[in-house]
Length: 97
Image (cartoon, rainbow, N blue to C red):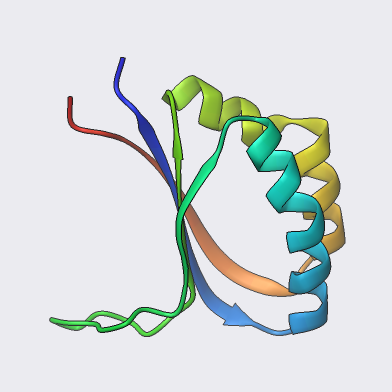
């Protein structure tokens, strides 16, 4: 079974304090669901029209586990705290096996 990757691109952070409150809930909720944090923060470099935006990359054992983490009550509680504080794009991708 291929690993899965959860990639979040933050287009805009309107309320950093809400993002911090979200992270306090989201990080342990996602870790409990099997997420492994691979990278987070601002890019060291961007090329070919890339955007300088906060990015988060997590690995899961499968696409099903990533989906289950996103739908979990614990992660949903973190989303409720986040509200409309950010504009972001979340993608799930399967790894190359």
